[in-house]
Image 1 (cartoon, one colour):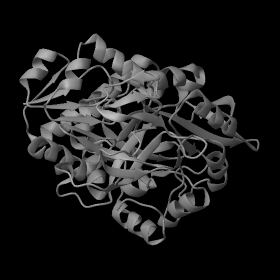
Image 2: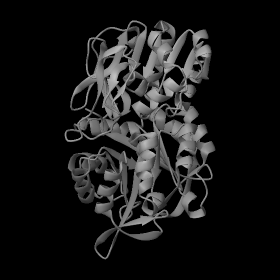
Image 3: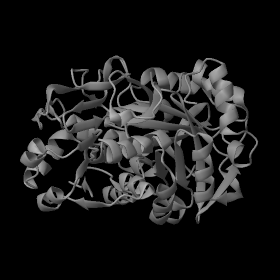
Image 4: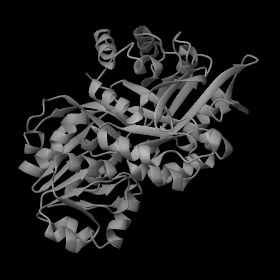
Length: 195
Length: 251
């Protein structure tokens, strides 16, 4: 059973539709008691970081997400919230990754970074099983996680940044697998079956 | 770097796709759900749905259609037409749309762009701008191209960017439906003066027009409708051509 966390941060209907495609059991929830009963966690997120963190505190999910041993996949903002801090609203995040979420420089590139970009796999991970290197995935974000020791794939947009990370049971993708066609669905399938 | 996008646009009326010339003379082009699935399979990077009756009849955009489309599409899509407030936007995003395009409502209330961007993120807010030359000036039109405003096109593009829009969908009403090519000169001027992506719309008639918009105007995306709907140009063929001519395209 997969717990898809709905903490009021953006549109999760597309993730639901993708999970329906894969015919997996999931529940959409924001309750700790439900999440504790599941095997894996999908932690999506579109929207503003400090608002999202506030919601996690209000729902009493912050600590649970920090210490969980269940495989967790953060998507977009969900991955950024795994860092120690986000420059978006200058908020302390879950501190799984020892790095800070930064903003793209509007004087150098158009912000948000929106559209299909190539993803270069730099470290093997079950998340990318069966995915050809340098495939395109769909991105829509203004902030990014810098490349760090837990980066497993990078993309380039004025700067090289983390397109995907893996640390212990924590996985994260900056792109939207639910919006990246067949390859994106494969990423979700890999997380569900292999991570 | 990020790839240039090809975006089929589906003008929708009662769940059917329609297409006219210079915003009138509507012609049926099929079911919206079926067409969108076809475009997804053919390699479209994104889709745009414009409920063209919405503004005119003051109806809410078809939330039900968004739900149906979201079930078959695994690429992003934008929905527009008659969206007037935050609750309307929220309803559409929750139904599965990735972005909303706002046109008449932001002319009436420019603050809506800022409020919506704050609440849903600027990536979800597309400013749709329809321009037409009146007495030598590019004027902004609203209500599906039926009502002239006092706004000048170029200034309005800069303004929506400052207000927090995530993208500009710029339609030349003079070029729309003519198939004589995009308004490259104006697009180029806008691209150079805003810090957000610009989608070219209005005038695509052949493959070369897309290449011209990407290379000469450096737009981020090209939108077209009739050309794709009636099977005159397939997305695959277009993408092969663009890629073969050194455009950065997702194949």
